[in-house]
Length: 391
Ligand code: PMP
Ligand code: GLU
Image (cartoon, rainbow, N blue to C red):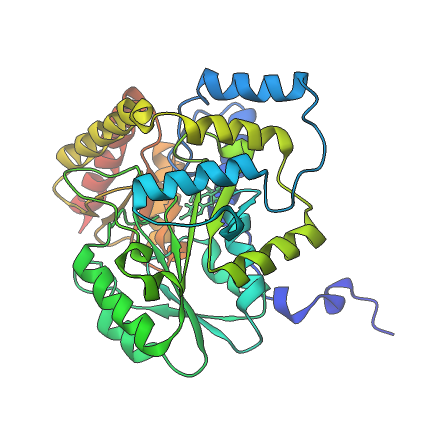
């Protein structure tokens, strides 16, 4: 008799890796608890607290007894507010029935893959990608197909075209991108849109860093490029990054009606609904004037500019146009070596690029205070110089 528990696991999770970003963050927390002083540039979460007016609305919800199950797709007021946001910010018209609120954008994405992937279905994922995309596709039985980047580290659209086949179910776009900070231009989105339309595949557009845009770049949702394209697109967004609400776990999607309906049904059979209290907090956030977060975005831009202006010349990096990450590399060291040396020799935690499908680089998050960032860049430069001299 086979009594090995692992042999009872589903084939879908046999090769599952834990989230590299969360794993490193946990390791740093343990090292700090053991008394080590580490600068944590690994996980991507805003270093600002959730604004008071958002916290107040959650406290009010608790005090008023808003503590019961809600509609599985989220309270109607919140879905209406999200529709207004889509119209105002993205020029997209959705009805509240097309919106599903979930426990974070990560959960929205997982619900999508669960709803669309059958065994053998392929989902095209442009490299470098956020660590969770390939794993989520695998858990739901689909097959992640990785697409190349071009010589500017942007989505290689010609390669994408060549990868589409009868098994392709969807392509996932993430603009601004985690981890490269790339923002897709309108021209790129149009070319991608043509391929999506020609092959009638789905397009999943992860826009969680929508407001984190620098240097005159502009966020465009691919769904806004035409009604036909919108009917094949699922837009994913959330409040975690924009309103410094990572722990509240609220994300959402807007999709063609039948897909939104089935995702709402999946949710009704699995998680019931996202936290009622967090939904009220998200409502206050989404109703607020987006200009309220402008100073935070400018602070992130100042940090980005500081990094790109102060990294040692021997360091190669991809200049981010958005989000709050930067990929950098030091000659002669691979991703793992660089990440390990930064941690052991300079006490800086980063995420190795190979977890994002970009060997040679490490990802740093600049969601840390300027003072910390200055110290971190000085230490990274010190290490780079050391290894540059060795070559
Ligand atoms: N998409 C991307 C690209 C992300 O970096 C994250 C980070 N957590 C998410 C989705 C999920 O965010 P959340 O679940 O906190 O809404
Ligand atoms: N998305 C953030 C990151 O990439 C948070 C951690 C996670 O969910 O992966 O660091």
